[in-house]
Amino acid sequence: MKYTGTFEDYLADASKELTMARLALETGKLQATVGRCYDACSNGVRALLQTENLYARTNLRANALFAQHFIRTGRIPTHFAAYLRDLFEERQNAASDFDENYTLSDAQQFIRTSEEFLTYIRSNFG
Image (cartoon, one colour):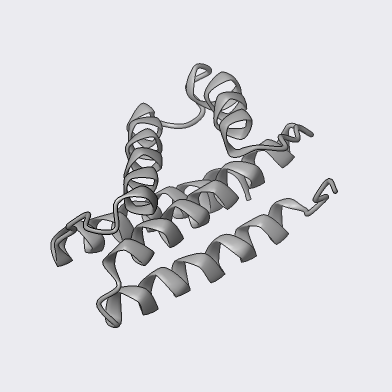
């Protein structure tokens, strides 16, 4: 089923995921922190796609559309594309390798960068 949320709906979902990432961090669940940061950023990407009336069924397609319409056009700084790519890989690693070791510092940086990405979206597209 196609989710037809608005820009604000996606950003609200992103905020919820980021709150869950912070809670996971507080309880020492560093792998869950990575996953929640990825989910928050994915919702941010989908919010951006809404501004162009674009829809993607999968995260891979959403990321491709994000790169095409926002990174390559210079509307979003390229360091966010690199972060999302790295975050996706880390999420995949965390999901498949339960022994993946993240430090508290790693998890805190994931949250900070996710917050920065979502703040950029709100400030420049909201």
